[in-house]
Every structure is written in C-alpha cells, then in structure tokens.
Length: 591
Image (cartoon, rainbow, N blue to C red; front, side):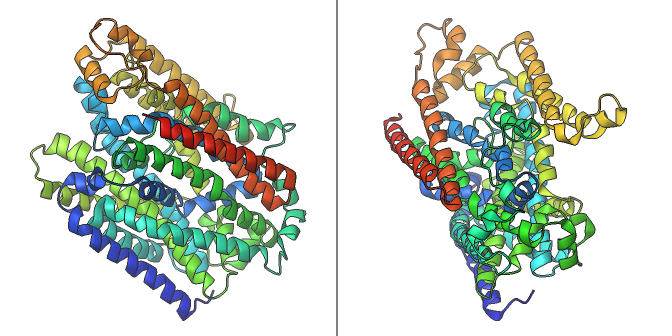
C-alpha cells in the first residue's frame, strides 16, 4: 500500500516524541535500581492505570480478538473477558496488600512470605523462568503481531520490522526506566485509542460494507454477533463461557491477569503513591481494558468476514506474506490497508505505540527480575546502584534479542495464549490464598509450578501421540481442566504433608501486610498478644462482585448500542451507572 508523506511525518513524529520522553526520564532513572524499576514509589493512580491499559493494548491483542471473532464470534471473547473477575479481585483485595508489602518486585515477595532455601529457590528460579522465559514468549507474540501488521501494511520483512521496533523501544526503555515507560505509555495510549476508533469508524463505512447496519445484517456476520454463547450448543458453551467463568479466572496464571495480582500489574501497584492510588490504578485499568477498548477491534474483525471471508482471500490479496504467518489473526491488519491518507499514519503510529508500549513494559519488568531477584540477590549482593542500573540496561537488550528470535518461529497469538494458560493451570488459587492462609509454604508453590509445567508439556506434546483416548480439538478445554485438577491435588497434598513456614517468618509477614486474619487464626492462637486484623474482606469481596457487574454491564451496553438494541442498551447502561456509584462509595470507605 502507498504511504504518503503526511503519514510518514506522523509516524516519524511519534518515534521522535517517544525517544525524547526516554531521554527526559533518564535524568532521574539512573540514580538507583529502585528509581529505575519503581519510579521512586510516587506515581499517581491515573498515570499507572493508563500505563496498564497501554501495555495490554499490545498489537497482538487486536490480532487475537480478530482470530477469536472470526472463529467463534463475539462470544468467543469470554476466554479473556472472564479475567475481569481476577482483575476486580486484585482491585479491591490485593492492591493495598501489595502496596503495604513495599517489595521492589513481586518475586521479592517470596522471601517476605516464606523462609529458608525454599523461598530463595523460588525467587531465583522464577526470576529466570518468568523474567526470561515467560517474558520472552509474551514479547515474541507482540513482535509476531508487528511482523504481520507491517508485513501487510508496509511490505517489510520480519527482520526489518523487528529491527526498527526493537531498536527504538530498547533505547527509551533502557534510558528512562519505569518512569520513561509510564510517561511514554500515557502518550502512546491516546494515539492507540484514536487509531483504533478512527479505523473502526472508517472501515464500517467502506463501500464493500456500506454501513453499520449492513455489517450487522450481512449473512457472513449475523451469526457471529451474540455476546453470550448459544446455550443450546454445548460444544461452544463449555470452552467459551463455562470454563472461563467457572475455572479459568481463578485457577490459571496468565501475565497481566494473575490471580491476586502480579507481574507488571504488581510493579505498577508497588510504584503507587499509596494504597488508594494502587486501588484506583487497577480499577481504571479494568474498566478501560474490558468495557471500552474491545469494540473497535470487534467491529473490524466482523468487517473482515465480509471482505476476506476465507484465508485464501487474504493469501490472494497479499501474496508476499510468508505461508507460516497466514492465519485469521492477519485479517485485522489486512482491513487497515483500506484506510486513507492521514488516518493510515495515525493508525500505523497507534499500532507502533501498541507494540512499543507492551515491549517496553515487559523489558523493564523482566529486567527488574533479572537485576533485583537474581543478580543483586544471588550473584553480586554488594553491587552498587550504578552497576545494577547498567545490568538492567544490558538485560533489556538481551531480552529483546531473544524475543525477536522466537517471534520468527511462532505462527499466531492464540497458539501462544493457549500454551501459557495450560502452563499456569492450577497455580492461580495459590496466589489468591497465600495472603490469607498461613499453612501455604514455599513447597506449595514449587510443587504446583513443577506439576503444572509437566502436565502442560504432556498434553501439548505427548498425550495424543500415545493413542490413548486422544483429546479432539473441540474438547481441548479438557486439557486445562485436567491440568487444574492434577496441579491442585498435588499442591494441597504437599501443603498438608510438609512443615509450615517458621512462626517468625509468618508473623513478620502478617505484621507487615496486615491481611484479614481469618486464615491465620491457628497461628495467632499461639500468640494471644498478637492483634488480629479483621479487615474489610467481606466488603472488599462485595465490591469485587459489584465492580464486575458494573464493567460487564458497560461492556454489554456498548455492544447493545452498536447493535441498535435500545432497551437492552438502556438497561445495561443503568446497571453500569448504579454499579459505578456503589463502587466509588466503597472505594472512598476503604482503609
């Protein structure tokens, strides 16, 4: 496609501004490791919340949504919409606990909550396992999306795309630390939102589609519009709706949607000014991520079913695309090739923003693990702040190189999403309970981590090859269910059969974090002088449920307004507003 001088000017301006922000933030980022990775713990809720949204705006997310909608319709998105329950639990229960812990990374938490060699092993292993392996996989899926988007829209090869995006992102991430990432995210968020909504409005009015009404009534689209799956079709209802809402949200670990909070979400909560700002940031993130942002992507995905109903249509339109990269997720970038001069520049800048925002967050987050939880803790505890910042910058470069290499062998984002869900199956409940049940110990987490990984490898690579009761593709959810069951049985058994952590470790954690004492009563009974923190847990869980209803109602309201269904739209809007009022009042009362 032809890119005009105006479009190139918009794109180049975006790169320049992003670089300047990194240079500006570098003035304070290099002071010490805490400044580099946590911005001095002085960030406001609105900046942190927008940064969380910008990070999950990732260029692979619209591709993932497009893949889902083309295969399973709008209701297929429940595989990730269900994670709202996890998010709201983090908002009202765990955000303040994380901020009270005052750790530098969520992995440092292990040596606050547990003791001895088990805690040290967990921290060291997960620093490399999550900071390098998981982080590289996530960044590779984002890089894969960039390859597909810019391959279609700009005709760039895989390595040309990776080189351009990687170099700019690494420069401002390594210069500005978390502060540079946050400020750049804030700028990139508005570019990304403008691009997404502008593209959806233009695409739906293309001559091939005609109007929103023509889109919604087209035979290729009309059976894809249901927000809730068809309850008469159990083959779709179970994997797309029942499993995510009944099991997946609390039982699995997935970056950005960790039960109990964690990863880069925890990093931002830890950098908040105080507990109220940590809560406000995660609340803003969940509202925007689930209720506002999905619909432009969904509209473009539905439109692609008219213009490119089959993969062969995309192959014919874009013959230069590598065969291994051709999939339903490619339809999103294929639709963007129809955009006009000016808007295409904004949209390309928004997609670059989405790529760079996610990559910069994962680079900073991953390098924080490598530096704080591995190098400074186990390799060189006496390292100076200057040396730690230097190691952080070097690890930033190394992580990007590994991600770029992996991106060249992946084929689609949905594939990586499902693999990561399977690897984390059964571990989620530990991350929810470890704050509130004193009996959980380091070996609980070690056993769950090992078993969930082995079960994932078995089902993904071995089970069907054995020929014993092969699991068909339309029942792939059974892999997740088996993984959750086997892993949960294992870690509960290990918890009850091994010694609890030393009382001094547990009491130090309890005094520091002050969780609700219900699950700590057996421990506290031995220390009658210890004050029991009753807390506000019932109210917090109530707010989690109300907040979830509020956001789902807003999500439904947006969909119903788009579909022209006035009565359901008004009803959902009223429910969302009432929920918002109750949530706001509850937030003000939280201590």
